[in-house]
Image (cartoon, helix red, strand yellow):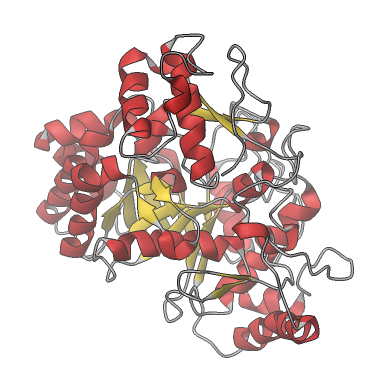
Length: 477
């Protein structure tokens, strides 16, 4: 548990935090706010109406998940900058056949630009967690798409990148210890960052403080997760103080790039948001919190300036998402990230421009600020509530489970003594049981940091104690 002294001084400091932001809004060069326009729904307005909606909200940046002709045509002449996407299922073809990439760019980019202001292509989306194992095709596909842009003289106007999830990180707490997963560094991370350096592009990152808070609500202050007044968290590695989980997550990625000597690569947050509704176990998913997170995030971005680690770099952020999408699979939250209902009415009211941000008071929960300490940035549970464990995904297949088990007990440094013959957790003697124990040992050792229970799809987080014979799974180290 972090301890804070000189409480009165800290209170004055945190109260001045938002006053500083509000004063900066009027004077600073600001970051930018865009929005993700997903269409996994059967009740959305036409693309033309969407363009008018964006204009009415004075949003000038939008990110798509494909290159639908009707949508691209609708944005022609709108003055709105557009990010388009080459879907994961086309990565193999784009990587293996230069002719495919040429044709794709000609048909989906050159045919619309510059009338439709396409300024970036997202090649794939969160490829490292794609169950179809498309990671090896990512960088070759990006290179071929860029070569096609060169062919059509579009490379100076349109950048090529790919959104990664925070699960690409081996470690994310404290932020200064941020590092990429070892198995990704040489095969894909370094080549990708080299590509960005060569082409003047940037890293796209999807960051969701909601997931960290929902899994660790007993140790993460809600105020810290929602950009509300809070005493902050000091990074033990670099001494910097963080007042939001979002900035801590972003700096973990910056630190991971810095560790590989890529301090010159910039970043755009291509997805972040908070659901206005969720299932019973999705702690914090409600309308009030969604309005607080997104509204305060917009204020933070439009205030200008960067993160504690890169204070001079403005933040560019795309909110997720424009609409609630009723056909998205998964928990209730997945269908309730929208700022708007399909009938174009607001789910809740937040500022989207500098002028609105100056006029509307920051969302602080309508209550007196509670100076709740944040335990270790929200990594390890110390109470009986909100505990999580990591278990093996039996559907991942024996080969993937075995490889992940070998890593966890080897380089990962998990405590695997108890799954040796004759030890407490040897029975049941199954790959899934042994892998679950090893994965959980590693997960707890890494302070339950985001992305430390993944193993390329071979594991997932549970909120109930795993049951494998008489074995007890630890909940912290």
